[in-house]
Length: 247
Image 1 (spheres, rainbow, N blue to C red):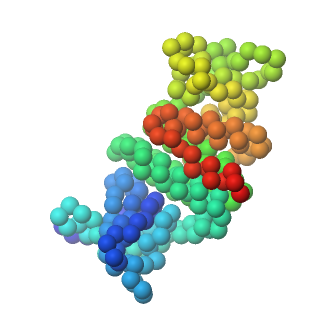
Image 2 (image 1 turned 45 degrees about the horizontal axis):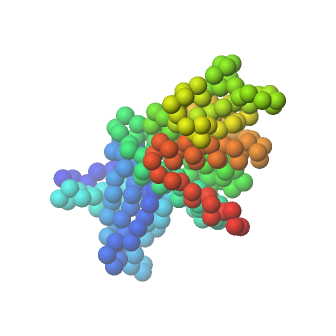
Image 3 (image 1 turned 45 degrees about the vertical axis):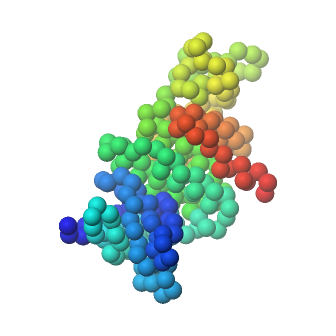
């Protein structure tokens, strides 16, 4: 088979044998593919520059016996500033893990790819917004996978009882709080600003997803809610941000 060209994001790079690397590359039309970059770990290797994660690249790939091999590449966006802080690196690794864990079908691979392109770019260039980028990515990926709902703030189903106004009861299993078959431990109390943010994350133009702002409390609430929601629906405990609690 003749070599083909494709544009993709390196979301993971791992050592393979002594001098090769395996690149997990997310593409718009082929979904997630694994490309073997032979010899790039050797000193002075010509293509060593494309073996780092989080880069958007144009690849030339050959196919042999069903496996992909890197022939050539050029960098479109390096996103190298991600490596400047532990916070950015932690969120970037989380994004990569989610993309690998999420089963991307042909109909949603393009949207997930576009989400990842914007997520890494904004993360690289907005160090102070890493927490909001984390939450926005989580919720939009869950929306792409079909796990979220739009919350009607006028519906009494979501309004929490008590003295505080504008508080809403959100069920992270995906239903509303009136479903008595679901454990109450799945419920989360959120202020109106956080619920509006979730609706915005789910529906806004992707180009504007990571440009939103929030106060610190809303950031923390969104981080906690989207992490728990992600863990429930992807059936995996996501706690990568816990390493940041000690810094």
